Length: 127
Image (cartoon, rainbow, N blue to C red; front, side, top):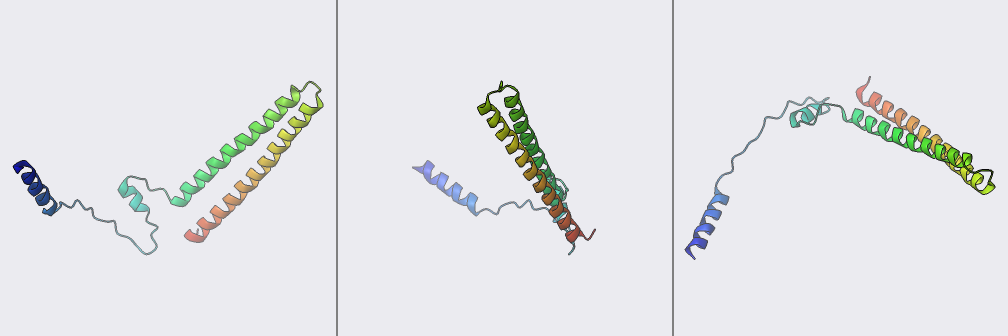
């Protein structure tokens, strides 16, 4: 019983003790600052968020483009191995057509995303 009481007293006292604060000085912020220095202070890097988002979009569009080309290649392989079978040839044509449509959509989305990102960067930085 005494052990429980002593533990309770120690736990209560440790909660009442003042906590040691390990604060860091914040970097000076100017009105036109984008807050990029905060990323460097936390170890996250100092790359602009717009550039990071643009590189993520470019990478995603590149991967989708690879998928569309693989779909076209699958359609071509099916057509070459159809052996004159009209049903398999028709299915291969559908694969190729779907791949080409997908590639057109991906390229137009890439162009639109690039235009929007460039416009936003120009509008926000004045460059």
